[in-house]
Amino acid sequence: MHKISGAGEFKHELPSHYVDQLTTKSLSVGTYSIPVGGVDDQQPHREDEIYVVTTGRATLVTPSRTELIGPGDVLFVPAEEPHRFVDVTEDLALLVFFAPPYTGRHPDLPHPADAS
Image 1 (cartoon, one colour):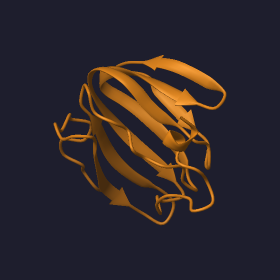
Image 2 (cartoon, rainbow, N blue to C red; image 1 turned 180 degrees about the horizontal axis):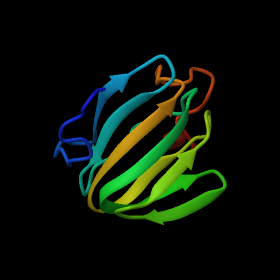
Image 3 (tube, rainbow, N blue to C red; image 1 turned 180 degrees about the vertical axis):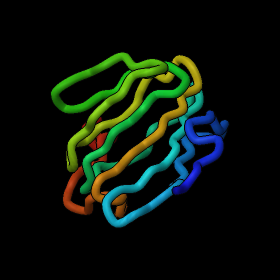
Image 4 (tube, one colour; image 1 turned 45 degrees about the vertical axis):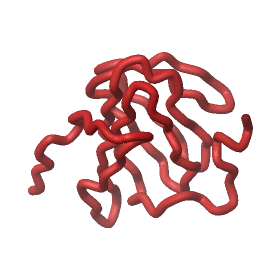
């Protein structure tokens, strides 16, 4: 068993704050915070991803969809899909689950901000 204390709590750091909390052979878990006015600077990656919104409100943008999100929402983003959180209207805190474990930016995929 492994307990992650304080997971999903908001951490006020600009432009955003990601922390790996747990990594196993099959998945990894992290926490991600974006304050009002912050910037989601993540880049596409190789892993499937699930976000659980614990606090805050924002918009998740992908090439095929734009979705308003808030507390209690669970979001799935498939591997290699460009995505980012924009218009953070309330400090945002998320639990993030990756499968397989997170390895970092996918080098062959553009950063979502490059599309702007």
